[in-house]
Length: 162
Image (cartoon, rainbow, N blue to C red; front, side):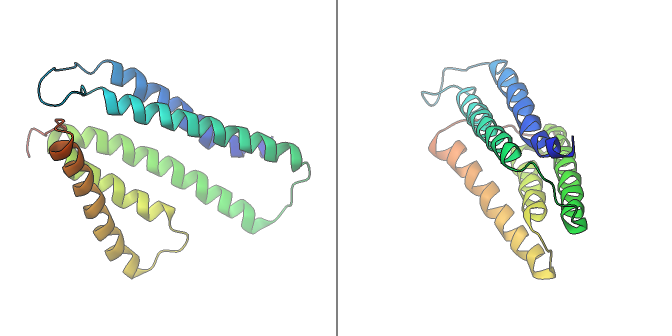
């Protein structure tokens, strides 16, 4: 049963991608501006996430078959616990950034999400990593905003406050 823990993150991502796809089908397509509707990219991203998560799940099942004996290493178990904790913290921050998008729009909520994503992917966190994470999150959030707003001429969510 402990071996099956490694299949939980891909299953969570599969569920999230299904929810994202269903939500993308609810986006009203407006036929002005670019040739693609506002529902196109969320559908593509959710389908790609689902495909990659299924591949991830299959790899975990393959590794599960080849790894019948489990080492009782305490450092490995602590890494698994911290990985599960970071996964749930990231999901909480994802939900928070979706909620935050209603008030401050895509740019700031995307900045928060990318910042914490960078933080959670680091094994060890140093003080200079925070500056690099801030620079990285600003670059990625502004880059995504510019790509979709200016290049693809799609409307990203704007908040009530900003």
